[in-house]
Image (cartoon, rainbow, N blue to C red; front, side, top):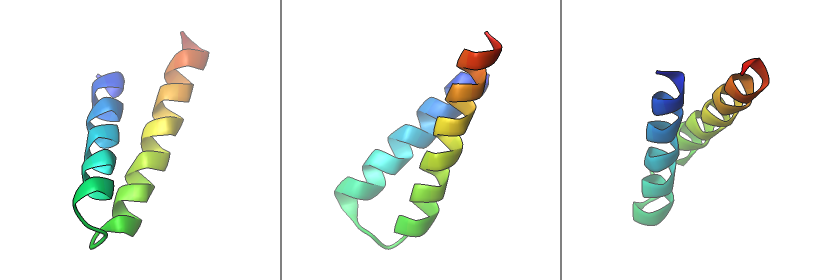
Amino acid sequence: MLYTIAVVMLVLWLLGLITAYTMGGFIHILLVIAIVVVLLRIING
């Protein structure tokens, strides 16, 4: 479940980079959250 959310956040971040910078700050926050979630999942197994 968490991995799926992280992937969705990464896709949204990439779309934000490609299309426009209107919500750039929000998208980058989502990216940071996605990376943290993925790292926690890897660490916890």
